[in-house]
Image (cartoon, rainbow, N blue to C red; front, side, top):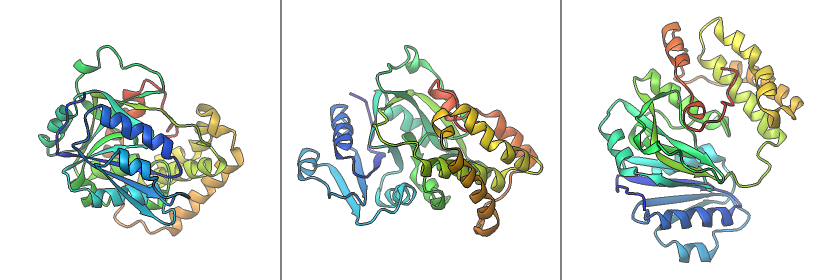
Length: 303
């Protein structure tokens, strides 16, 4: 059982993966988290929520849109649907397996200038590190979408995720905006989330194109001169060298890179502000959540 507090609400988006969702909700139940407000948003699945899921998990609030609006829009919607001060952000194939969520909530609520916690992530059959329960929180650049605890009010205040991104880089972009407003992001290794990464075409060509577009646009939007053009030029080589799955879709990556250039000049920037040189150097010194709490190399090599 994972101790938790009712200050936490759980938000999950899903689409056409009812078996994965059922397994995740079963683990939440087994870990004693049925007392937490839980919202699952179906992003336009071909099949509506199966009756068996509603019967087996009666504490879960199921919401649905008839058409697919995308994960960013749905995650922002979840923040508005929940009523709790904190949101435990999970994927439909990720769930806490060890640690004390109540301690994480206390840490976040007692630090007014911390916007979110990046929870430790393990994959597939990996086991939690032996010393995870004794590790202290520390600053990081961002969190991972499948394992985070976020202050709902701050999330809404900052406008949530950049919905035009559709997929990829949304966490880093949100966290950077939070930093510019004086908030910090911390890694909290004392809570462990397992991510099963359900089989699917995770690295299809369109995803590679989105990855390249969003990573490059993130740089062009926020990095100071001359770093933004130097880093933007290194984006594609960095992705191709360090991510073999994405590197298979070279044409899609190139298309995404040029799409970022066009978007940089045609998409309204809104409230986005470029980092000062001091802010940029401070941000660069922070580890990414992928580096810090998964033991896996970062995918955002271009930064």
